[in-house]
Image (tube, rainbow, N blue to C red; front, side, top):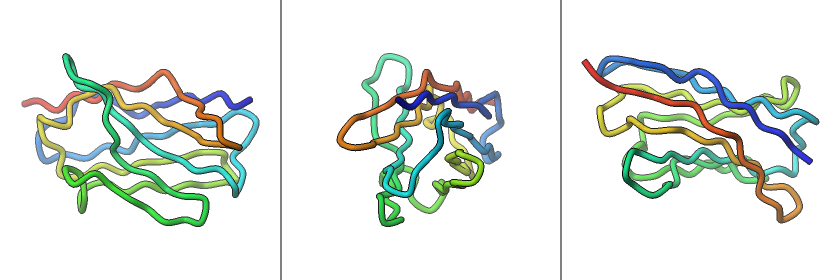
Length: 115
């Protein structure tokens, strides 16, 4: 069982930066795949970024070059650095861990990009 808690969201001006964290109780193992998703108001949840079990990263076209996913197994934490934020990035951001074919989700952290 994995329990995930996201943090780091908040209100930021366009062009600003935030770093989201996802703390995993019970640990993060090298065989886990990690991902971030987001859901904007009135829209479906969408993929943002992932890190596969072998460390390959993939990003949605809309965030490529601006967002970076990373992990710190020693701290049992997954991060997402978000730069050059845009109003369209406003959403509830969720962390997901895939372990042994099972998906585990956090409850999300809200990011609002507005002047």
